[in-house]
Length: 90
View 1 (tube, one colour):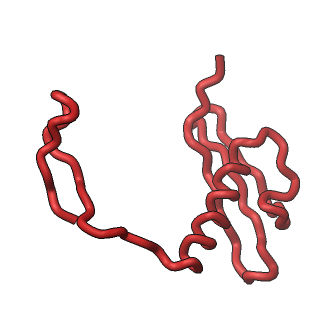
View 2 (cartoon, rainbow, N blue to C red):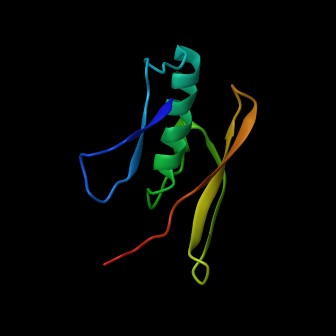
View 3 (spheres, rainbow, N blue to C red):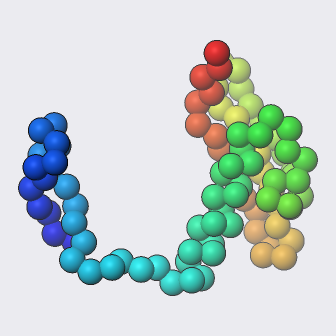
């Protein structure tokens, strides 16, 4: 990628441009989608099987506003830790 001046907005001085398509492999794309599903599950109030896998532990702390879970994926032989961003309830 190269840096180019952006004239579309007076507030943005620089933007990134890509001279050619920047593809990712199908395997990397599928992995990203797989882990994005875990990230989405972190925002569900009650999710007993995040991304269809085994929930090991849910955790949260009211004072620090940390919430998340640990899931076990037996097929991939991995544990996934998912944290959600700050909750701003209204």
